[in-house]
Figure 1 (cartoon, rainbow, N blue to C red):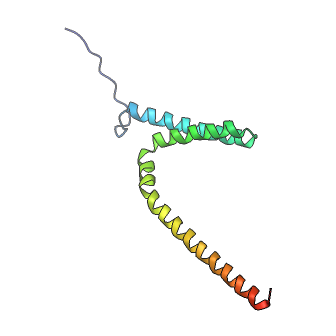
Figure 2: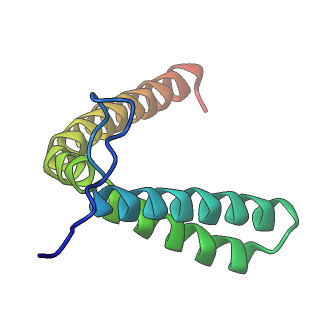
Figure 3: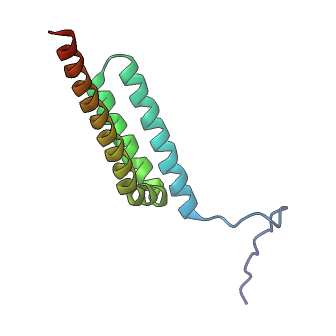
Length: 111
């Protein structure tokens, strides 16, 4: 007959079971944060190219960690682009109106 040792239960019965997937997520978050901090330090010291490359790597790690957020932003992007296009169209109309009024004013003043 074999004797199998039983695991001693922890004192906290409400503790969540250990999930190795959470550990990898934590490491991705830590790596992303460190990479972004390093890119900030590189940019602050004047090393623009290395800082930008490091920032892109940090953003890629963040995108891997935050898949749902990236998906939501990607789906909302066309709406934001439509809003920006509307603002630019209104600004163009205002500039054209100001240009026409300037030409009329020059004609009235005789120049």
